[in-house]
Length: 549
Ligand SMILES: O=P(O)(O)OC[C@H]1O[C@H](O)[C@H](O)[C@@H](O)[C@@H]1O
Image (tube, rainbow, N blue to C red; front, top):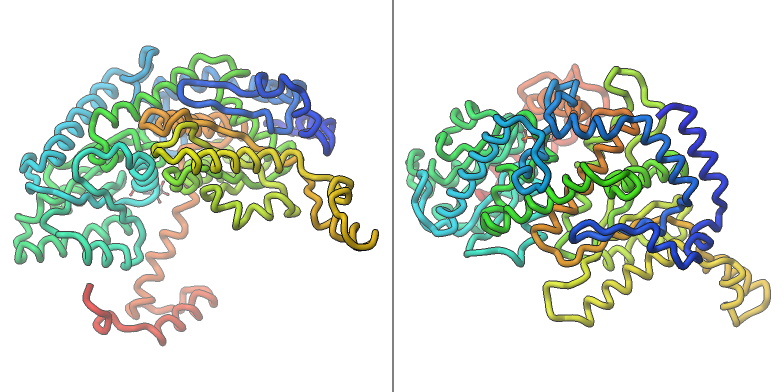
């Protein structure tokens, strides 16, 4: 975005006054004009502080990005992730389910098809409890060991699609270095009936390798130290097959990841193995189909009705024209409780950048701070600040029309709350309205109370409705946000597919670890780190004193 375009957007936003949402929502045609349906998703933008002229201004900025050509370049597999010299082909993972012909290279599609077949065979064997591919018989529990993109996608999807679980497998997720996680799993699971999925694109991630080793020791011990017998309990998903081999995982149980799929875009690949094991291959294919549905839409719909494009433009409007630095994602659906965490990585790791691919600083603010929790719980926690805090936060409300359970009264109350929150944020309550409601006390007392009970309103939100929560609608929802992020990366001129910002801390942790263990001199550390290391070391409970897991 150029400084001139930014100034245009700001001017357009100033034209819409403080009461704009009340005024805009008074138009009976507003919902029809500003909501769009694609497959199982309906997205309503009518509570955004936008009018036709504002959308035109945004369209002008979009037109300057050459977005259609750059979208197609992504689908074709051009090297759009310049800093890592990689193609970006997560869409190829679901291309077989698309209606449109695939643009990805045939060789890539061939590799993906082959991997999907291997996933299917593995899923069939584990679900049936068969000892094939070197697997042990009678697996009951699956532990997905991975972090970031190797954790958040499958974790979200397994949790969201629990109702679609086939067979008797239970999936667990182990991401963090905190030993409490593996210790708890080892207390409750049977090592001889546990399958460990070591999911790491790089196979160098500290958390994943450490937790993998802990679980390997535990399973080897269950076979009286026979490491060969324990081997079959491990499956690797990685782009680094050599490292998986060095870990002791046989090629027949190593599934591929590729350079052309970013971690946070990888749930559609073998990284989604836990999901495939939980819901079966057919439902996993339906999940891919949901993603492909949005790919087709993204590739064909004109920008004014293109959902990912509109979501991106709305985000730009809120961030750059209205200067709102946050985005709250509130699913009114417990099964989607992991969605805010998933979207945090997708949006903030992709767009949390301040330089353009050519190294020059960006011309405007980029990603808002994304956070959230399920409604209605969140109403009883942080919604106070959303309604009356000094900093308005745009909200994405996500609801499911038909529930998975027969408790209609619960569901109607849940949705009524979601709709009410969005309406309250938009309309607010003026001081005069609050004053008219305050009946007791003197005039002065009534005015004081009315001030507390005033809601500024004009706080924007988008509402996304899923017809039902199914593998297909979940796939569509995830792909919708993926492409939103892509379009925003064009508007903000950042590379959405690298993540250099996570490296510095990793390097420092490597230097601090030996100091913490007393094997290296703290002198090179800064004063705060030195002080904290000393505080930890004096109070540290030695490992030998810790209870065995
Ligand atoms: O899959 P892995 O190579 O283990 O990477 C796991 C995660 O760690 C990194 O630090 C990145 O920030 C994430 O994008 C990635 O998903």
